[in-house]
Image (tube, rainbow, N blue to C red; front, side, top):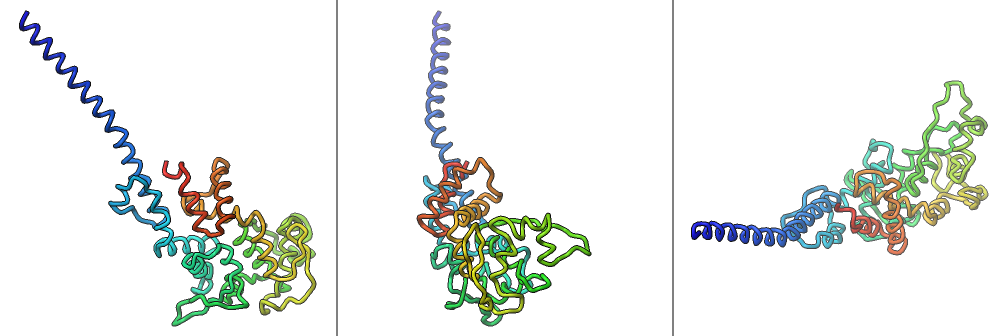
Length: 310
């Protein structure tokens, strides 16, 4: 009986120890899970903003998102985002540095904490200093759209000199317009009359983005930026526009401008385009961006979403 009692006591002690261990493990598991989540979140944020893993102290932080404002103030972030924007806004790398004008203006806008609209409306001029492009103040500037390298790059090859490529590229950069060129036969009519025929008329003369209408208020190929002196033309859903500046002002005032900025921010952070499920995230970003105006505010809005670190 004593032996049985001792065995019984040992079994009871083992059960008690196991129970105590289970209680200890269950108490530690939430802390371990939280620490693991914070470490993952810190790494995700650092990689998204800076392109590199988080530092050890950042991975130990109980609030990784507290680092977002610091990340946005770094040169590493400005360099990374400016390169991203240049890739998004240009069809290919420029043959000269100044052709990649969005890169230089983006760095200036981010560095100075300017509204993102200054990318397109800022009074800037890009000129090389010792072969390296630099951004200067210029009363005749219009973001980077009047910088000669960019200006000449997208003049296009329309036979009458109409700058269809410039018109498209301005709308693409400011509001995210995306069109696909239609391949025509070698003997197809490439004039305005030919573009009025189907299927070309849809992109060139119909819709708010009608390329021929927008290009009609731009200077012709080879002309100075202020060469057009004709009357205002109706475009963008009924607006009367007389020059490139009025065009860009109207585009920046549109809802599409705000949505496009948040889509850029989303693509930069996630490494993919948004889809329908991301609608609420983009809606909150647009609200924030409208209030604060800066690209940094759009990026911070998306990065602070609960699902970003999941």
